[in-house]
Length: 279
Length: 331
View 1 (cartoon, rainbow over the protein chains, first blue to last red):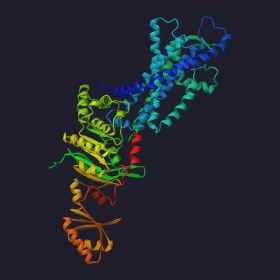
View 2 (view 1 turned 60 degrees about the vertical axis):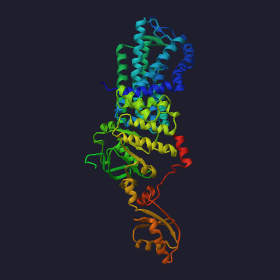
View 3 (view 1 turned 90 degrees about the horizontal axis):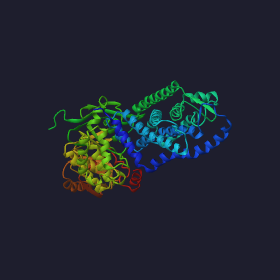
View 4 (view 1 turned 30 degrees about the vertical axis):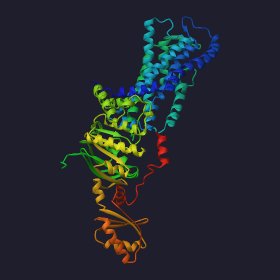
């Protein structure tokens, strides 16, 4: 029989996810609100500013809402994943983790279980944003056949899943090394700013100064957003007056960056968990 | 009666330090299969540190320890599979039901589904929480929480159950009921290792006790053996001249030891004190020493503790309202 101890951790974390109604609802409504307020406000502005730019013939042009919907999915995944370790920290502070740490369950199973439940939450959120975004007018999967839509949707979940695992591992590593939730909050805020803004989530990176361009190029968020846009919009489109093309090679590179990032973060979390003393 | 190899916990020269502070300072002891063994000592004596090393939550720094036949340093996983633990603080998720708490634990220890569900029903019956199986633990009373934790500790049919201060913060009636549950569990064959700073708990519950203070074991024995070390009776007296009285009393027959306390003398006698007391009063009055108050009693665990550690237990208000309030708030 395959040992599936991580499913025990997953099961408990999901029980809590559905049981804390306010947390559940806010985590589902929050990304929709981003789309509704920030998305509509910004797209009204951007669409006005870029109205004078002539469309490139033969290239599909998309509105700002469509452009930024991919960024909102990525941002929501980033936040949810970075805070995924919080439950570990609460468990640790309230002594609940001692039961798990004193059990024969290998510690990597804790990491995997928490990461899988975080990934599940990200999948739910990504699906909500896509659905809500399309309702608001984002042109996701426009002109796709039903089969291609399903495949594209699954591919987006694949990118989102690997990205969320990376940040969940990082979050778990930080949480197990810290004493207080406030500390985690502080570190997360410090991390989210550069990751979110030094990326292509909300605007093109072509006009960035070189340092920020370099950060953006290694930023996992950039690669997630590229992947989502590739599958939701296409390999060649125009938005905010700029033409975006993504070759299959570039797409594979993005996937590769996410996989490597997740692998490194898993190693980091594994190391921190082996060293952790919870008593 | 005990054969060699009947020890389920064997510890020798265990030392554990936190930085410069030595919490456990070279303790050696053995727990026999089937007994209830207690560590009795004040808060901060090193009891919890020692227990955390035995349950493999803290690394073994120095010395050796074997639990259920496995070395805690070399085979921590085997140790973990063989033991059950009830931690000092409540470690129940407030938003899970009693059934979920036990189910989670069974899954953690990789118990097969059928065995899990049978065991859960059996244990809920044992700790009389059948009616609460679908109740969130935040709605349980302190005693019920403790019982649920004991049930959880027994989920995997452990060879040894570790109980760290099992009745801390519980009211007197609930404590007595907890003792009954613990005894019942022990009768079914589970060896029990517990730590406590309650004298009466150690006395009522244990087959054997180790008194521990400042990280060292000061005395080990059955409760009556420890009490007998102090003699048949203890006579407390205040006199008009304590130093002189002490000198005279020490010369008398059947007097094992005379100690000085803050407000008088304590005399340990090896024979029935009711007969000796009149003789003492006579002898002292011949010397012109007047006895102002006198009290005679059988040695209690408190006396044993004071005798071995030279102080009253530093009981951080076991029943003081402020302390129990603070505890309640933490839960």
